[in-house]
Amino acid sequence: MKKYTFTEKKDTRSGFGAGMQILGQQNPNVVALCADLVGSLKLEAFIKENPERFIQCGISEANMIGLSAGLTIGGKIPFATTFANFATGRVYDQIRQSVAYSNKNVKICASHAGLTLGEDGATHQILEDLGMMKMLPGMTVINPCDYNQTKAATIAIAEYEGPVYLRFGRPVIPIFTDADQKFEIGKAWMVNEGTDVSIFATGHMVWEAIQAGELLEAEGINAEIINIHTIKPLDEEAVLKSVEKTGCVVSAEEHNRIGGLGDSIAQVLVKHLLAPQEYVAVNDSFGESGTPTQLMEKYGLTAKHIVEAAKRAIARK
Image (cartoon, rainbow, N blue to C red; front, side, top):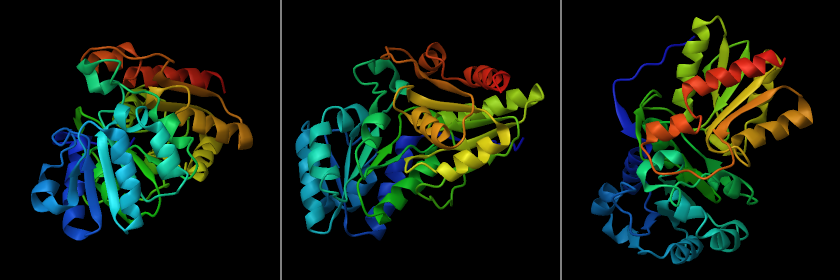
């Protein structure tokens, strides 16, 4: 198995902040909006360098989405930022009507997604957002895996025409992707080629999948690991090519098992290539307060759980 190492850990939201700083310097049409969470979204550098291109909307997320839609009419590229729970669940109507239906060039950038928000608890730990956003026609949905990939994705979506949902998080995780990478929307990243089982992971779960691959290798199981950073449009070609080789699937995501990456993969398989699939995801429940590590363990989102799922999938071949 290809070995991945790291020398530093950072939160993916800081990757977003770094990407925004670069966009502020390179693209005069980029405008940042925030719903009273500048520090949490790491926008300080952008605001310091471009105060005239920042709008503080306060605790008024629906208004922020409306302002963003309006800004696009004048050729601006608005990045609307807040916690994932507020960026989707609180303002779904405004996103549907003013952004998706109108196909506005709004970038909805959401931090503190999933269980790893931690101690803030279930009311803030949205686990339905990927499903909600991918169901909107024309919405591109992206969930990068580390600091470097989040930074690259942030820069890439500014050049993409159309509405985008970019999801990232609070916990510090290993930085294991290239610093100078080119982010390709809709193109899966092959982490490790294998022959026995396909593990499709997204977001924070990619590092867990890499660790699971090493554990499986120690038991003589050769896992193919693919980073699905773009949930929609899904790289169906990469999914089918991998499953044709391995014959079974594990999907891994920090999200409800209903409506997320796993369901998107299942739709591809049921249409083109039937194969056993196991889900590593939250099993249709809300979260609770706890440290990210505690919650990932309790809700079955660790490398150990991916290993167990891989063995179940292989046994079903």
